[in-house]
Image 1 (cartoon, rainbow, N blue to C red):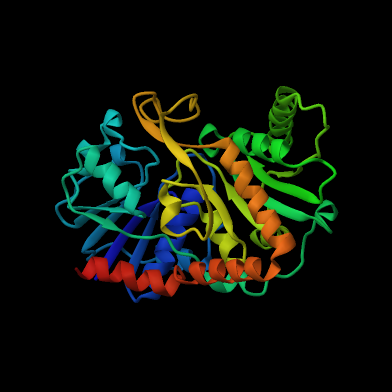
Image 2: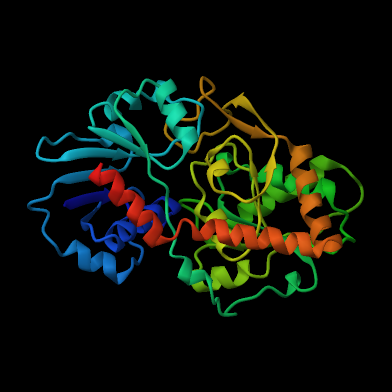
Length: 368
């Protein structure tokens, strides 16, 4: 079997990393896979040398074409079995009309169970298969200390890694942290953030503006600890080294199809605090935060037909988010054995999504 895999794997984004990991997973399972790059943001990020080797192969004689891109860009080609691989974070996406494009495919692949239901609600009629994302777990087993933040020494540290977008819900995380913890407590929070189209300094300025707004709005009068913030691009080994200083990962997003940083945190031995009712339910080990379906709001940094008020996503309860952060800290402080067991469970959970394991699952989907 030969597979053409079309994706934006050179964009340097989380989406690009998902493409890379899927290609390498298929390759590890012995599938002849031919990557073909498309570009959405003008980026030209470095990719693994194995991807470049696979690119050099011809697509002639291919049996399958996996289109890991936006559904409205799908093209049906009768020479192949056509598979559309997509993600969505809302309860449905019928307003986008993506279902019409997806129904042109022979099959749809999505990474989690929540998306199967959302696709069915939206009118997708073709077979829908769950194709989980993968991770090269070996990269997280012996992380060298190549970077550190002195502010994180001697404290319990939460960690967030992600883009500064409405969907990631950083404002809720700031509210929860600064409401729940007094600045005198030995607790800190690390943010590794970036904003698409902004350089490192601009991203940092934007974060500080948001943080100051939240602190002013709380009006607690108790003062607030400064967050540890890193903006812009970091080499993976440096990012992982910094993450190793943290004790708990937090992702309070309104919707999340997967979340590679959360999976990376688990591979490093961290439990995850996450929004319940999203795709993270499938793999996260840690503390789910109560959430309710609410109309999407203020997500103006995406396509006009996505995240509109006619669609709904999961909104985490800020009070429960703070309570789960407190629970993680207390467990670490007063019941270290229980906390260590949770960390081991997180690490074990991540290992079940190793490249080779998921590669075999993807091959089985293709063979089926």
